[in-house]
Length: 185
Image (cartoon, rainbow, N blue to C red; front, side, top):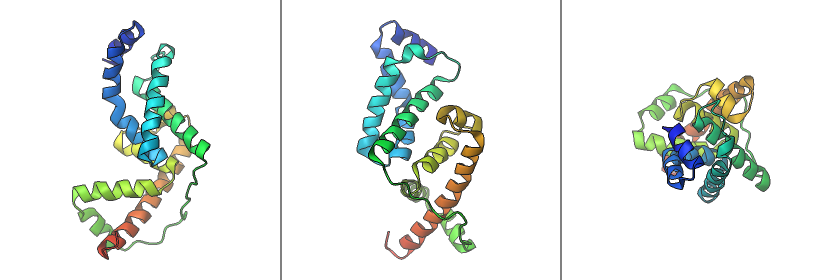
């Protein structure tokens, strides 16, 4: 379906691009939010990214999926904004302390809505790269090779970031759980 919409857009049908936006806006938002961590700037990045995609649509060769091409634009624009604003990236401890099984079990027992809320809160607290890789790997269900194409990063770099991201996410979720249990979150 993407190919039809792309051809229609290239032949002057701007309505077809609305279909593309409608199909990809949620995942594009999720990707940008994982890097930017601010709703206002994320909306700005989406506008810039979709405009850039529209303007450069004639350069899409079809060597990869359209979504891969579009998400690469979103990722690049997101990191440009982070660099522009020189957002501080928090780097967490490399070797996490041992987490008691009772805490792990409690995290798993949270209601689904609570899990989503706490995971999103935790994703806001980890670095943009880690958050992005977790979202691409788990939410968008991309494999390492697809993430390499979307980000332009090496496979070993992605694996290292994914490993570090899992550790940091677990640490943050544990802290959030402890605070929540005390009624402080």
